[in-house]
Image (cartoon, rainbow, N blue to C red; front, side, top):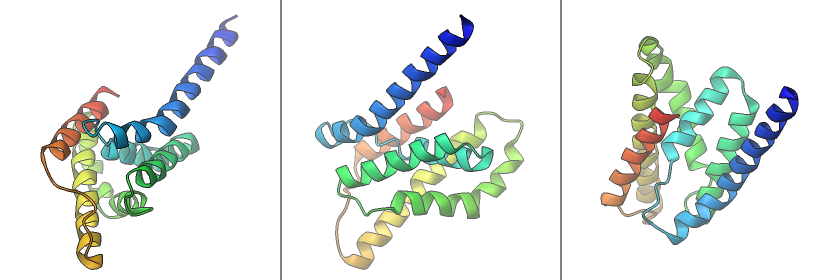
Length: 151
């Protein structure tokens, strides 16, 4: 009986995760006050790479691509900036092993800043304007940090 309950909980979790990944980026394009969750999904991708969990990697990559397609952002830029973060910056965060909140918070802040830097560099090189920097991005960063701390 316990096995059946765990199977049902796993099925409900995956159903909710897939629905969130496919429909949340569409809601973001309609309601602009919803946070982008770039840092949270980037941290999820980093955790999937570090712990070799293919489900985390798949969920994060599908969300990132879906977000970029729905918001007309440069394709694969979130993934590239997250992988750059994982290779260049994340090894230095290993020093925060004892602080369970420091590493996720710092990772989200640095991931968001790296993505914004990559996005502004893309805009500068190609003379476009992908995103407008305003209070909504600050709100998105704060909610991003809260989501990572809660999870």
